[in-house]
Length: 197
Ligand code: SAM
Image (cartoon, rainbow, N blue to C red; front, side, top):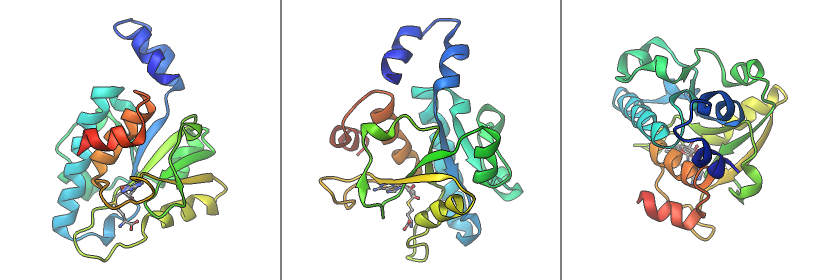
């Protein structure tokens, strides 16, 4: 289990070599970047920057990957992109390069809740989406469709409070933190939600 693993080797020189290879990627997918207003783009960049802070609290900077990275994002992102995994092409291309053919997509529209059985995946994907108006409804499932189109298996999973996504924070960095509390620390969904609220 990831949690035990991290504790055992914390402070050990071997930490990087052993654990990073077994550790999944946490991907923020920027496929829908152009659907955002200027103000929203700034928010996406800010939440990505906060995600960098979050990943370093739990794992290693390079386990956070950003895909579809473009020049505009680079200008807005005020954190060191060389400390994370930054990829300028499509998510599917990045996954193929890494030899990952099955992913878990965090999707508020999914039928099933995220559970322990989903943790042994190569990558978790969070939509790099910020909603201020109602213009980006159901954009997360589209990220999954795009991946399935090229043969990647996508498990769509939601985070809910007793089946309901209302009351679950939807900021990118908070979804990431919630996810890390569950996957790395082994906490239950309710507890993880409570702790990020
Ligand atoms: N407007 C988007 C939609 O309707 O699909 C939701 C965007 S949400 C602000 C940003 C991202 O956080 C989503 O793409 C998803 O990956 C994640 N997310 C937010 N709430 C979630 C939930 N309850 N369960 C799973 N993932 C969630």
